[in-house]
Image 1 (tube, one colour):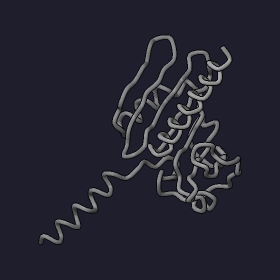
Image 2 (image 1 turned 120 degrees about the vertical axis):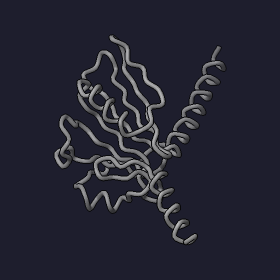
Image 3 (image 1 turned 60 degrees about the vertical axis):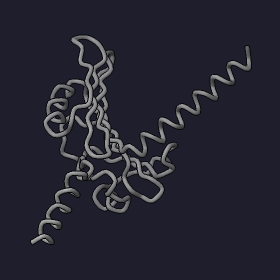
Image 4 (image 1 turned 135 degrees about the vertical axis):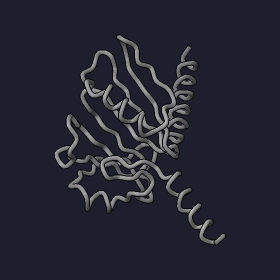
Length: 170
């Protein structure tokens, strides 16, 4: 009996801490080979922060109204770290409601006029919606924390180097 309870709890905990799946791709689990077998992708380079491959997924292969662009980012071991998408800004309210029903809302900024944004969490993944005021497009990005951490560290280091370079010129 104790063994059955332990097995049940371990199965529940693995589901509770699973990363999200978007367009059939589970972050932290999907491999480059799985992506290539599911979609006819184009390699678009190496990601500056993860040093892994990046691919463009043809939006015609995904049945999602208004989807304009899908980019995937992998780590050096071929595991999916991020899915970056572009959609029409008119989808913000719909996506905000849908994601809010599925993931934990961390913060939001939705003024009547101006830039709209919302951030959600699921496991070790951050999901963001960003709709700039003077744009017709918005982004919906699913990014694992390990990639976000590398991005923040490298951006901070680049910013400090830039400031030091500028200060040396004064």
